[in-house]
Image (tube, rainbow, N blue to C red; front, side, top):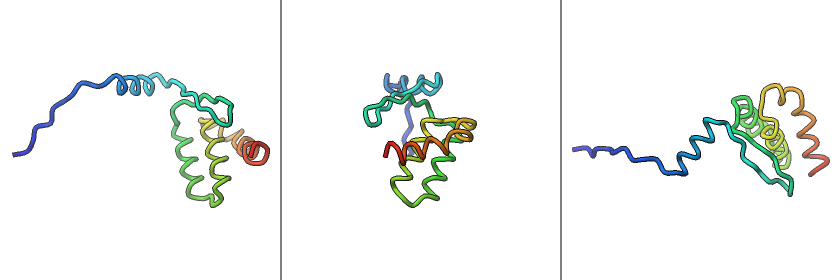
Length: 94
């Protein structure tokens, strides 16, 4: 006979994660001493990060481009500011 699966009560960590997703709360990420607020990835950001991993060969450019896409996190922000921000991270901030 197959085992019966029992439904268990959610832990407080799971409830906090679900609430963060539902409320779209921002997480604080520290990069080189500077703090950035990053919310959950939107669809365009996921597609952009996937495209970067598939197309780009240099590891340094991958990290700069992904960081720019994650900081912008939105269709219009990526459309208008992505080209400037990833170059800023790559060439100026290094």
